[in-house]
Image (cartoon, rainbow, N blue to C red; front, side):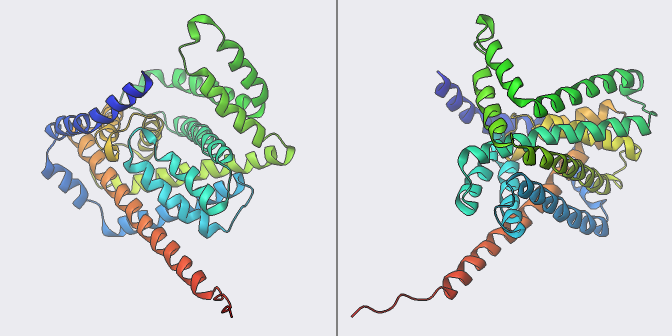
Length: 336
């Protein structure tokens, strides 16, 4: 039955993506999207791309810390570039498996450790996003959209989520046991709690040592740096598009969109789902509907272009290094 559902999702994903794209383009126009792209200054595009490189370097550094430095940062950077593109184009976030596979092949990392690392990285992404989100809400309270009346409630809910994530990470062994107990409750057996427990066990075992827990502090700061860089990058891209919101409101919108686009609901190339989430969030925050939709397409296209450029670099770099190593390797002695 599970396989039937997966096959059905695979069959429907392309037509659903096309329908969603047609609906969104109807809310604006191709010309509006092209106009939004043309409004971005070439200097800001270049600066954004440089920030995107730093973003991937920070991600590579974080994985290096989490994997306890299994290789040089250049190798991990190339893996991150390939992994990011896979995540950008493959539906349902199945691109995450690209990191697990590449870490095994290129860094000789066990599959279980690779899965645990990606899982924990995503947990720290949510934690980092929530902390910056709280900071953004605290600095600026001048919201014209729906947040104008519910900011204290949103902040309280986010703080509760932050505390729960920290407790789940630091006391993961107890959290795993708790999930195991509630998975035995009859009316909860249909939930994928055993799967969640197995992933949490992998994380808990790998990061159970005192040294590993000290490294988690570094991982937290790197995770926050990742989303600070990402927020600045996106703000530079959209500041000329006439979205009509101040920097802190834009950052709040970007961070909310990050949380929702992290869910495994993407279509092919993340097209449609990204723009829908982006436009709903920014319209809710007070942006014009046409500008919200067109800016969503523009940001998505530029970020995907950045990912493709770095994927080309990473692939070419890996092939060059492989060719160079094969050339340097001494040929076997002739047999008599």
